[in-house]
Amino acid sequence: MLLWGGYGVPQTNVIEYFAIATTGNATDFGNATVTAGYRPATSDGSRGVAAMGHGTPKLDTMDYVTISTLGNATDFGDSTEESNHAGGALGNGTRGVWGNRNNTGGGQTDTIDYVTIQSLGNATDFGDSPVIKMNSGTASNGTRGCWGGGSNG
Image (cartoon, rainbow, N blue to C red; front, side, top):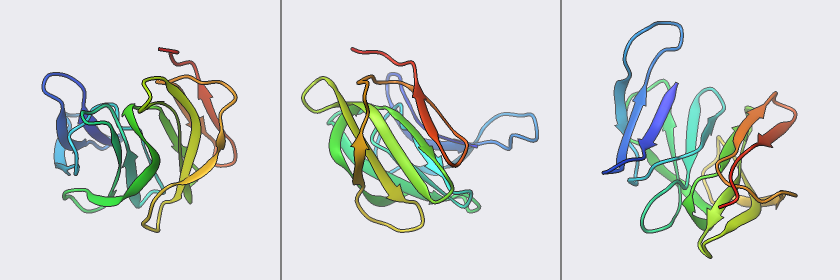
């Protein structure tokens, strides 16, 4: 499991990992390309992709790592709009999807982005969320993805 960045004073660009099958502390994996907190991430099992996050200035940055190899993240591309607070991420093993975040206008956005995890490039608009929230929890069974809860400001 990877942990991307952290929220606090100061924020961090550290990526940490731990093996879920064993007990113990997290270990340094490498560094993200930006310093930010609340970076929602997803993976296809071999590549992990984190997007946006809580940072200053507002971010549209997407990073990726190869999970089996320790090291720093590399630029993946950009999201469709900048964000200053994270939403949620989920995936199905091929696509990564992000939504329900706080946008550059200061409010939440209904935009949902997606990428193909094994190809580099900018995100594409997937559609819109019917409810505008940020900080939502996410879950996916590989066929359907769900956002739940969150805050409206």
